[in-house]
Amino acid sequence: MSSDFKLAPGPRGFKEILRLIVERRKNPLELYLRLVRDYGDLVYFKIGSIGYALVNDPGAIRWVMQENQDNFPKGPGYDRLRTVIGNGLVTSKGEFWRRQRKLSAPAFHQQKIIAACSEVVRLTRKMFAEWEDKLTSSMHLDLAVEMNRVALNIAGRTLLDSDPSSRSEEVRVALQDALKFLDGRGMVWLRLIDILWPGRDRNLAFAIEKRLPTRANRRFQKSLETLNSVVLQIIEGRRKTGQYGTDLLGSFMLSHDDDDGARMTDMQLRDEVTTMLIVGHETTATAMTWAWLLLGRNPGVAEQVCEEVDRVLGDRAPTFEDLAELTYTHHVFEEVIRYYPPFWRFTRQARADSKIMGYDIPGGTVMIISPYLVHRNTRFWNDPDTFEPARFASVAAQERPKFSYIPFGAGPRACIAANFAFMEALTIIAMTARRYRFRLLDAKPLEFEVNITLRPKHGLPVEVTRR
Image 1: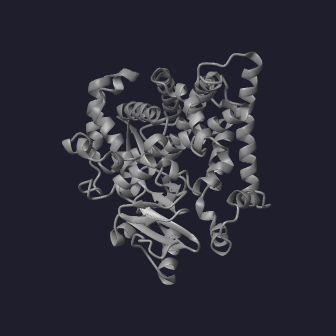
Image 2: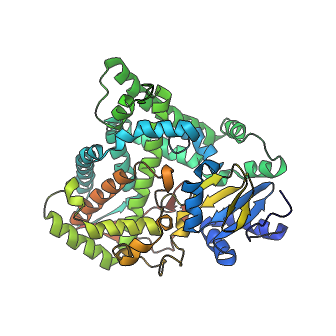
Image 3: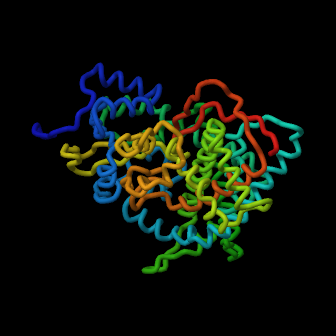
């Protein structure tokens, strides 16, 4: 690095970096909030040979994720994710990603989302039927588990035209085991090697790590075998019959490149479907869990949701067209994923030297962008620690910089399934709010499980009663 580099402020020296490492292990959310509070909206620090830049300014985020995206491909944090979901849309890079994005786009056309809405209604009703079998005057449920199950069933039906039925619990457990493997807190030894032997092949390190004969690794390997078995068996069956179906997998299989006519291979299909199964169902389930937590803590907001749902729907289930009329409920969900964005952090890595906000960014720097952080930037959000859905109906909402609100990412790599996620969440929230009331049971202070997604550590136990 040139001696005349002007680096952004940040923690320096052994004691400060050691404190940073300890805080990152204990509570990364509080750490990031402290760093921007102490140093500003661009913070630079080094751990061993690796430089990091924490970016909390919408203009700088736009520069990294859109205007200069070719210089900032996906960061090393995605290497571990790639060991599970392969080279799907979330993890792939460059020209291969552009091709896959183009091939995947027809699967998320609005007509596909409209058709999927009826399946969301049907599977939500199925969840209610299971509740009613156990419900007398009231009962206790863990809504985190229930939202995970219904989201998985929806993903299975809309992606694969297959209610995982006889294998649903097996698939659910496999997905959870895969997510546990992705927990970055298990990477301490890899970070140590980063410091002592910079430049080694991270993918090789991950390959070695997941083959160590530990109980966790055996569970992980079993989870991958289960997921691969389910997905590849369905793909093989469709190849043999030539009946590709009308679900998202069918759209993936039928889409082709306009230039050379190429279609996705079976492994590319497997990667994209596994990406949607793991990332898609997990993020939606987590967002809906946060929605019920925040509605439980804000009974006035919950009452307004019920009033709107009753007025728009009456006694019937929602259609896709009804969702546009649920404007307050829509603002509630927007505020939920501002307050607790399921994907709480993205990383990019500078290919070459760059300059941001007047500071130099050396090539190789890992850029950390946290929706959780930027959604609490007081320059763009008034009283950000207050849950206030009305902020999305205000004039200020139109004036905020686009990249100050990034629950689904930003720029060309923003989540392709964002509209599907909104449809699914609004449908389930509306149907559930019309029929049930929840009372939060856990009085303990909220603890976060900071993994690939941001989740409540102890689930969401509630008492359920009929409205």
